[in-house]
Amino acid sequence: MAAPHFAFITLFPDVFRTWLETSIPGRARDRGLFEYSTCDLREFGLGKHKAVDDVAFGGGGGMVLRVEPLVAAVASVRQQHPCRRWVVVLPTPAGKRVNADTLTQWMAPSATEPLGFIFVCGHYEGVDERFVEGWVDHTVSVGDFVVTGGELPALCLADALLRLVPGALGERAHSAAEESFSLKGLRGETLLEYPQYTRPREFEGRAVPDVLLSGDHGAIDRWRKASSRERTERWRPDLLQTP
Image (cartoon, rainbow, N blue to C red; front, side):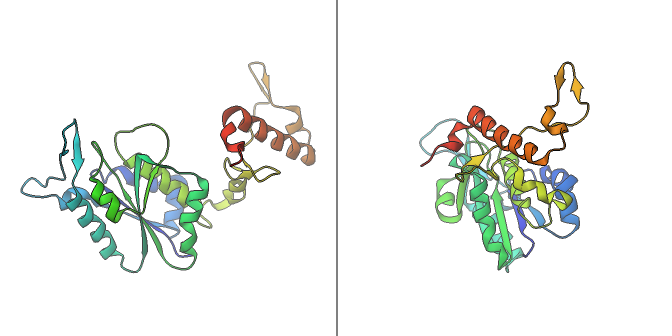
């Protein structure tokens, strides 16, 4: 599997270095399991002041990112890495809610050719819709809320995609199959991860469940499966609904 490349088109390129060069992402990058780059949208701004936004047609508050700088930035990223198959992603509250299955599908082509993701980090009132229609492959939301800019959602998506790269999790790779949204019930439904405990065995009257201290791995497995279902029913019953 070729190492994926994550490119971020942003007005704030310094945001990404700390996260992607620290902890699990940092170790994966050091081992060549992924690459990343930032593209400063301001470099493609228009006029003497390098303008990247303008008022919205039709009125209303806030500014809209212009189509010309965005298209030029995407072209620049593609030119710097011409051998890759690029997927352009726009995180936006107006997009389709993304989930684990979606990200797995995005990563599938990377098994046969170098794959890259261009994350367009919007700001202000959003981006010109003509850019979305002509240059964006996926408009996705990471939740039903609004944040200041697209940098945080883009990092969330890149981090989740990175976890799908073989070897990226190192010694923790075996545990990924037992995380929320990877666990499956008897009928193939998606489950949340079961509760986790560590020392001390008791804290302020709250004890670790006895079964986890029993050494009976069969009983522990049954408890974890039951706990996953109970937690899913309580917190995310929508995951158990059949289409």
